[in-house]
Length: 370
Image (cartoon, rainbow, N blue to C red; front, side, top):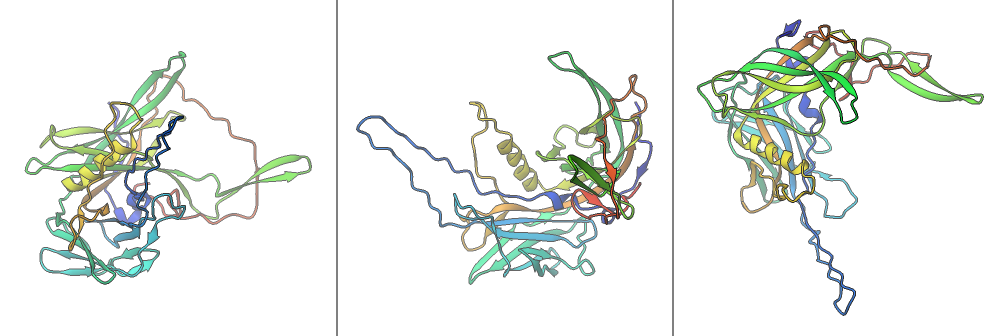
């Protein structure tokens, strides 16, 4: 079976952190009922308590180099048109099982960031998040052990031919990562990936020229890469049936639009069972289709609690994770048919050049292993 043409060991500080794209907006699941009878019975409209604000915590530390981030916000009341309120006056810190304390000063809009020179989490250590704000509000995460993630041995593609109900045949490739699970521990994994391709241009503008509309593509002023990332479900695996064995993990399906190699960075996280359970329930909630056999809505369990009131609802999760990343050139030149070709929309080249943006979908930093 064809495998990756090249493998580069992970270098997490060279690529954008995948978690930067994950933003948790968990406002709870509230069911309302409106019963109207066309008789003497008056309509019933339930009253909703719109005063309560719940704390939302979004954060992760790993054995990658820092800095690490924790984002704090408060939910807006139900039916409010406003976005969540950032918490900007809190004291945030992480402690370990050796009695060390690492502060996370506030930067902006509820984001608290550690000092990368003084704090790098280590496998084998146990970490706890502490958040304090207001007169007497203190929150803690459950102490979580940071387990090292096994490395990704390799990655490869499998050619896929699919025929739909109308008889239309399409071609693509399934991507698999291969890793070996440690036998001495119970492990839970989260997977992520990003595809990098050199950007053809850095900005597009459509202008009216006479009676025609003309598209102008403005070139990049320097090296620039477009980034494609997954959306939707969080990809999870538990080692219940694979403990201690080498296994293949399906990552994603990629298009067959070229015979050239397809560059991809694959991230493998070893996460605590509490984080695995959190994301597992999130997946079940977001995939509900309204059918009678769907999983009933439920409060998503957080590993964070109010020290003085354990019954208070806290949203989000603080993750302590081991991380490994692999960079791969995936083969697409062995398929028995030719790739499909997309037709580029006619465009003119604009001037001057445009600086490459550095964000979730584009970077000027050369990907590790490129």
